[in-house]
Length: 478
Image (cartoon, rainbow, N blue to C red):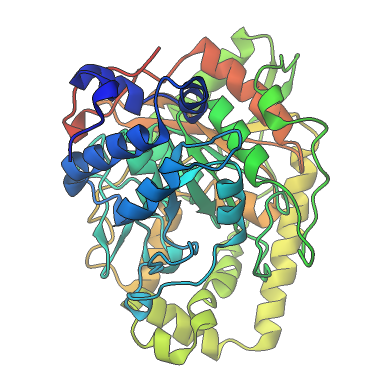
């Protein structure tokens, strides 16, 4: 399937593929490229590159072409975008990466998908995720192993790992993800992207409720401006939402062009859980702190009162109920981890569940109260660089959950507290693997995070860093 002729030579086609979503939308508006040409460009790249990555589990070939021939108006009119395979797209297979839903085709769009379509995006396909999004490594018995384009032996990380691998490899200009325990920020760190987790209630969970108050949809992008503009597209409450968030003072995209002023930033290196911190991840956070200092911000190294040795068990008591939401017949078809978690959930008393909720709420208040004292809190995104794809092989189901805590101790606490956070690709290991840093904001203050993130992006640009493992040629635009 050749790319459209107007994309030019292989190198210029590659450059177009790595243009930001906002840049592509502008090209479509000016008539310099058509939506159909963008769709064909990405379908060709997916066919050629994705067999090594397995970032897509379903492609909307004809559906995307039909949409592209008459794209909806909006700020992203005609720009292709993939959807994570945990979120429903009307008349498109949505598997949740579990054999129990291998042939599930929903009748309607999830609310966030509806909003993305209203912004003009063309749905390109569905991206890989672990079963029910339960673990921060992207593989499942149904949909196979997703690999990191920076190193095919490593995970792209997080339940939005397929989305991140696709964007990093130039198979999409941006992607929709969701974050229940770090699943946008984890793959952003592993794949060298911007991953923005909004405040609880910023993005409606419609048509569902939000029993846990942990998960929210958000963008995975190569630029801060794209992340801000996509947040503008998906933000907003709907009737019946259990959590409400005050609307922003102005569009988030405008914040990406706004000087943040002089900020007070806390540098927090001690993980919320008692796990070691890899030197490369600590170095990334310290380098980011030094850069913030150079930019005129006040940076103070301190400890956040989020350490609690029982917190992982409390979080597990909530998390283990996720497989039970689909009923016992579906649970019986799931993988060993989901079945084990479900069995534990059925044995859990209502008193024990409520105790976990109350204790996590107390931890959330301590964390949010501390973060409110600063304009932002800087941490490593992860405690380890991208781990091997077989990192959990041979590990007993519950031990997998505990091992995952060694990888991503800094992210789940942000979901528990409902705070906004962003992972930025500011660093790398000595052998070139991406290492992200996390900025946590005050509740409902994505604006400050976007401002300072854009400032950091200008001071230390990352767009021209392309992953070598995908084996393509060409350079990203400057």
